[in-house]
Length: 216
Image 1 (cartoon, rainbow, N blue to C red):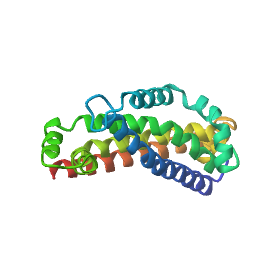
Image 2: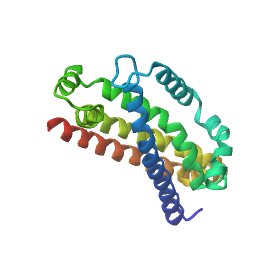
Image 3: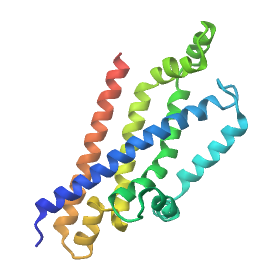
Image 4: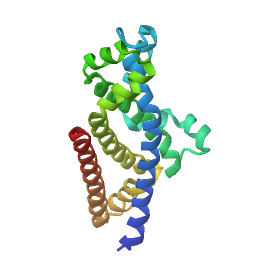
């Protein structure tokens, strides 16, 4: 029988670290990616059909590649950035690579929900493209962006469990090494419960923030 307390606390911290760091870099890269997908489309603020097609293809490739395969495929990139392909920090790289295309599409969809009339009105009043993006598109799409961010976090939690199962640490690693390989089913169940609680809390926070922005 294993001592669950310290082991689960360490695994939970590793998962939160992976998810938090990956979410930060995903937002840092995914938000501008989604904006570019919108403004470079035909009829967009910065119409660049060629660039839009390239970005669309890259996003579709990233979204359609299974995460386990993606982890292996980006191993050289992970080693170049982190210095290793094994461990909690190393797992952040494939987590970001997997989540950025998803977040880009989330942002794109959220911005498309903004009324074109608001954009036209802002342009008619002399607003620059940058002002339209920041003051109109992103501002009006805040509820959808918050919900999309919560959905991204939920996906990253799932990805982190898979990353842990193949050497990334965290709850996935504990569940496989102890719960599955050593038939310690209590470890498996505790890991599952913690992951479910994480997801529920993230979703609740996202919904609450989105409702607040919607009321405003």
